[in-house]
Length: 460
Image (cartoon, rainbow, N blue to C red):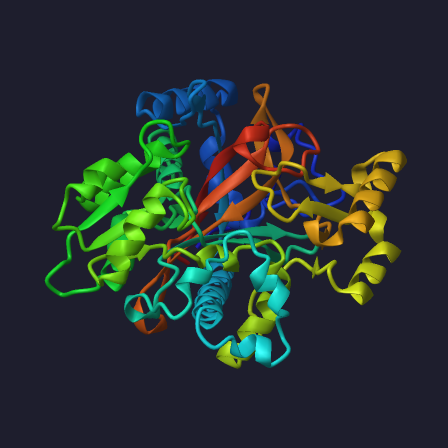
């Protein structure tokens, strides 16, 4: 069991906690929280700047990066791990599994009877106007009714230390291989006692196989393949890693067209719609019962930013349970009474384009200039259904190496859930902690000077 330090560590002598939010690792007296004591002790005596450079060199040497046509972007890892104790993780794990089960049932319902619409819980327009809604999937049933094989939900921790779900990513979520890379880089550098060591991530390949097995349409066609755009895809490193880890071929669309032995396709292309070359090719094979797809086309209706406003209601409707993990409050601005309520607290909200991603176009109004707030207000009033509003959550912070010293930086968490048949959900321990390297920044994304941390889940 981890024991809190009796006195503040030298490592934290000049560390200043975030005053407005929750510090994950350091308490109000400047001492390590019990969960973090072992990890922070393991950092004592290290030259932090040199340690950060060594970690980055290791992952770069492994080829871990984000690809693009304009050149590769480094995957930056902060060497201070984020730690969750066993009890805390158990509660998160249960909440994640519950949420993904409900989202999977919602998608099945969307393309079948729409019971949740008939019950007056989710407006039909939320579904019909979702960017990734696929009308052609009406009446389709994937093997085992498993629509979401792999999901990555974005969690944030508020000022009271409570985790909430900010976004549900169930279309083509990425990041689990980067979490594994962060772990390899950290364990190679830190000497951590067994009592403080994190749960291992060695089961990631088995979790992927579990999701693939659920998508098998025919007992005679069990060969899986990972379908990629190729080296220009931003997450191509993950595509290579996953295919090698699971022992399946990595194919591009032309390669897949030439194969007749593939029964399951793990779809990681940017072509997320049926109305694409990849979509039409897979649709014909799906319709013929020859291929199962992970994740199925049409799942994007469940990670639409507006759909997020109704997920807690989905849990109650489909599972007859109370949500274990709350959603960040999300406003459906297409409902006049909710738009009016949002206007009353407009300066306190975060406004997102409904179809945006990667933090692009997000307006954090409590941090905006008054004239910018009014400009956003006018845009929302002119086209309310083009935006989604959320309560601003002051993201928790974590000690992070900046300029060779520890500084407080904001973080979020993307854990990964793998869904099988009969509603069986398995959760990888921890996930990918994302960190904003800019002081005060609340958008934690690699495209906006963000990086990652290794996420430890303690065994006891």
